[in-house]
Length: 566
Figure 1 (tube, rainbow, N blue to C red):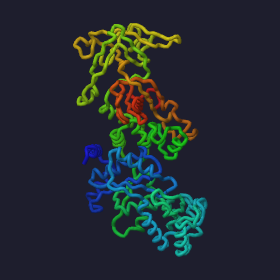
Figure 2: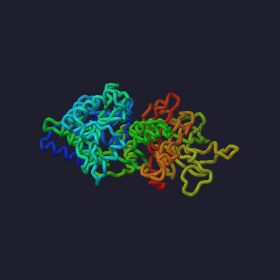
Figure 3: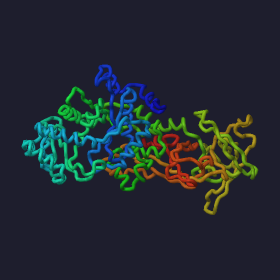
Figure 4: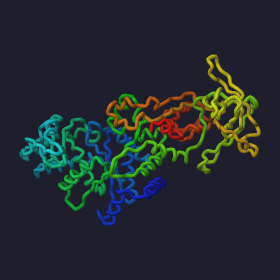
């Protein structure tokens, strides 16, 4: 077992959730001959998001913790929306989260077995071909308190249904002209039992099987049977499938030829404040260029979070903390952001970046002198050591670290005041220079050579400390300040407005001409840092030699609560 897998097991050992309790009870009772087998079954019709990560953690985590196996199965039963691009991205995301599947399967692997099972149902009088339109079938379904109406084709001869079913797959039948329905109970209190559609006609080529099939199984028909074919013991899914479970079991009962049965268990899905999870809405954001793509760092997709600088450890920690229950709710995104800060605080190298630079000139510092100042890479981890940072007469500082007319509680640079330059000297501001429009172009100060950090006589206290970057030893960078994509807690629940109208106009602010330490010139995409006093950042994929681009992963503190927005 790898170190990553061991850490995942430890994360999940802290307390048992209700699914783990079920698994342990099954093991004690010797069910399934002591086998534990799960599966993660995404449909390859989009990119995985943080909600899928919750399912991944339980599916793979159960297998890891109890000596079982977890397979990856793509439920590719709808060629209209599916693509190899999504298959590849799903695999990449699972690996990034730290999990490994035993086998890769596709629902399309079972198309022949599913077809044979459907033929078996027709022959047993448990399925029939219906020629009504989707609207007519929906109208006949009834309501939860009123029984449905039988289709006029419900009792058509078995031989006729078999012949038509063959034609559905031969290409002779147009899309929407016919469906195959299971014959169960149109008066059932469970609407899913009211003769559900199990096959429909689609003429679009499939990403794996091409034009071999024209009749495709519905999800409810393919899902449970695929579990059965694979030997799944614990089929884990979200709460909306509770009402589907009796149908899941009914199909298995018609198919099974032994005592083995996969069992479905449901847990609450993951919802986050200031976020939408609907694939349809996420697709709209991408297609309408409201974001830069599926991996836009503001998106809740795993590829977007990875690009933003979120770590798999932080995501797993967050999911472990919120847990698995049998009731739905919405989680505060600040809990996720806290998990990210917690992880990056322990692992990220501290560096200096000046986002809005103004030049500071130390007028009494020798013009040609350059010193090496020691900077601790991470005070939380001594093993990360330290580095030397160049210090010179001219430095870049943040523009808002100087104010000519400052209020009383302003503890940064203002004429006559003192501050400490991080890891360097105490300086006293002596004035500034402005252009013809009144904009400050340079700030002037004098340094005290007796106050160098680390010297015994450097203990004199001042109220403010600011960061800096040496002008001749700095590197230019673009900094992208990402924030929450939506302005309201529940954008999906706002009925009065289109969710696109609720996008936060400040969710991305791009700062060019920023100055960073020279040690970052060789930084590569996904390298993570804490920009001192600003936040956690990582290198974006857009970076290239001579063109550094950094994404803000998360600010040092949750500013939304201060604003009264959460």
